[in-house]
Length: 234
Image (cartoon, rainbow, N blue to C red):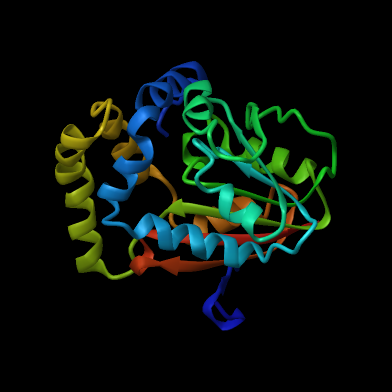
C-alpha cells in the first residue's frame, strides 16, 4: 500500500438508542453475516485497515465501533495495546471471548482522556453515528498530536457500470441474503439505505479535514465499494 495509491482531498435519522438496539439484535450472527454479504472481502478490508494504520509495537490504539472486536484482534497482533469500544452491549458480549479490552462507549462522548491514543480507527461505523463530524472531532480529542486516524467505510464505486450493479445488490440482493443468514434481517434494509446515503470519497475527506485532522487522503478498495481514509492529528 504505497503513498502513490492514495488520493489527497483538495441521513438517515439515526437515534442512538434505536441503532444500538438494532446492533444488539444482530450481534449473534453479525460476523458470519458480514462475511457472507461481502463474499469474504471483509477479511481483506480488515488487513488493509491495519496496514494503513501502520501500528507499531507498544502503541495505544482505539478501535471505535469495534462491534465484536473482530477488527481489534489484528491490531493487538501487530503489537499494539488495542482497545475495542462500542455502544452496543450486545456486540461487546458477543465478542467477550476475544482477548482484547472491551469498553462500552458513545462515539460522541468517548470515555478516554485527551491524547490517550497514538492511533484511532473506525470501520463501518461512522455512518451509523448520529453526528459523524462530532465523532471525528471526538476521535481527534483522544488522539495525541501527530497521531493517526484511519476510517474504513463503504463508499462510492468509481466505475459507473459497477456502481449500478452495486446499488442494485444493496437494495435487492443484500436484504434477501440477510434473510437467510442474519439473526435480524430487517436491520440490513437500514444498513443498505445508510450505505446508499453516505457521502462519496471526496466529500468524506473534506469533512475529516474540518474536524481536527490534517493530510487527509483516501484509497479505494474493491473498486470503491470501500474506501480507506487516513489523516494525522493536527
